[in-house]
Length: 116
Figure 1 (spheres, rainbow, N blue to C red):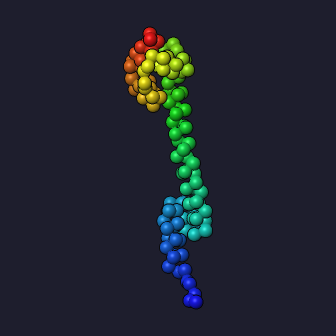
Figure 2: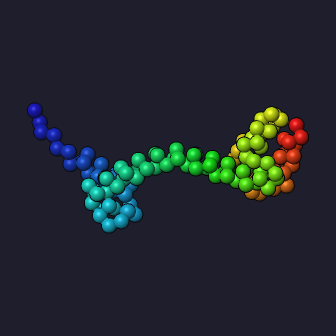
């Protein structure tokens, strides 16, 4: 049975990891072992934080909607309830955008929802 040498495969794998670690501090971008560890952690954090970003954005939208709603004399929870009851189908992302960019339109939505 012939002996298997891994020179080419190993070199290609190391190059791939070191390319992913470009810009990291000191040995983390130059030494394979340190770079591999740093890249694996970075990938794990990226995977986790792609999910956390969705949570964070929703929290931000809710905070903005609540602040704008209180300026219009209603709380966040009451506003969401009124929107559901009145059949106004607008998501939190759009509501938050309106609250920041067009407070007049947001006030009108609150008014319409309250009247229903």
